[in-house]
Length: 141
Figure 1 (cartoon, rainbow, N blue to C red):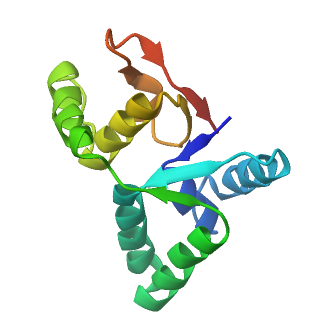
Figure 2: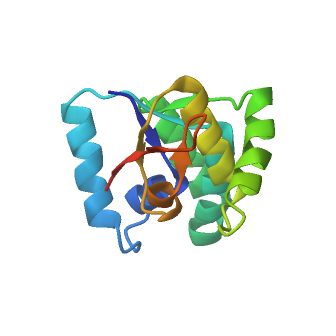
Figure 3: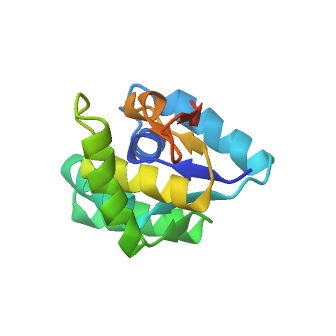
């Protein structure tokens, strides 16, 4: 089953100082063993690069994000309709402070009907997708 990778999961995997690093490394090993397709969206790549740049500098951030792509992470562009859905997620969940990257991620998951996400961000456990906003994501941790 394809697994969406959120910024929190990828950062935890790449940053030894992250509190979820060991768990993320184990999840990554498991997904590779199971030959799962791991994918993400362009907004996650940008957000991840900015976090890595703050932590390690531009050169290492470039190397790490490029390495994810050459290592098999499937980077997918956000679709035009994902932006409309991102604004709709904000309207549908006014009590939540979902980041735009997360809302674009939810929209892509919904559009592609892929409901498995690797994330350490609680927002992925809170959100519900689908026309009735009733389907929980399967969150891998």
